[in-house]
Length: 485
Image 1 (cartoon, rainbow, N blue to C red):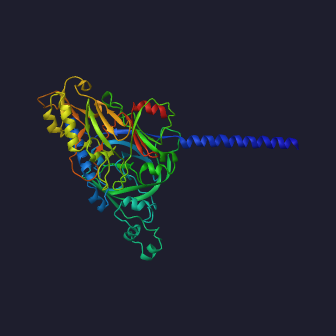
Image 2 (image 1 turned 90 degrees about the vertical axis):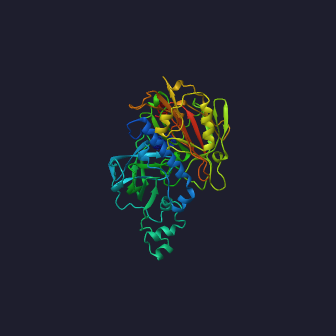
């Protein structure tokens, strides 16, 4: 009898130890960050002048379209630009209906829906045939689902309107019994590109460099069948029900805390961009061991633009000269206008005309020879010739001062300048450097400025959703990847 009790006690102790160890292992898994590799791509042109002309024009289009908020909200449109002509940072995703086919999506913090091209796909003005996925069978999203009005934005203030358009009979609408009626197609306008898509649900998986499983069982996305000038899909990271982080948070609770990314490194002519860019879902717990100092600035609340991450910019220092920013970029007013959008889908940094003019006037004081021929060809309105190394040009430090104590970010020269190579037929074969700041005008309405990804290269940009702030920490992205692997 005593032997049985002793044996039983040992079994109970073993089970308890197993429970404790298993629970501890589960806790580690739930707190682990999810790391996704990012690849970088730019559109191909015969010269760097034409390349940056394209990027400059598209950044301007994106900024102006962001500002047309009142008209676009009335039309229920999400405005951006055709990202296929801009390039950017891509992540891969695989769906349960297409397990053998991986598709690349542009990481875009300036939008909030995940969509990709599906067969059949009719695209006007597409230069390259896109990778197509097959829509999942019998997996459309109901018009009663919260995802449906989220895809249609504010076009239908009453959810019953959507089900009426979907063909649900009035008796069923009155009883909220329209589950068998699919969400109608939604339309997204991207400046000089657009899509028409339907919502579907499917399982999806993403490649990660961590031990956390990558399967998302109920993934909601847009399947685009008609498009103009849109060759690639988009992974929206903006705040919203349908964004990729929001959907990952249903599987990985740690993602609700926030995410970060590191887009290459501005040193060595951006040589790290293809191999060392990463997206980190969840917030790392450095426990005081990190040597990287972060400058944090609050995320501004803006009901008029709920899908943007907006911050306040107080001023810019050029060397010892401090230039105060206009109110337009410091805060959001009662009409929902103003603020600065942190946008991974824009290349250039757009500033109000008054702030831009003051910035370039101060830089001109350093007596670098203007490359006006390059300015005309590239549409980049401030370029300078240089001989030898661009990093050794006679130019000062540029510091962005965001709202908040200790929220100043020194921008490396390789971020606020891009090197332009001479074309073969140019009479002047000197290299030039052009600003990645652009004049966005002083039009009132919508965001006041955009902080584009050229300025973010070589920084870990942290979106701390718990404390509602964004942080910028300078560090080599490869070193960051080594820490979290």
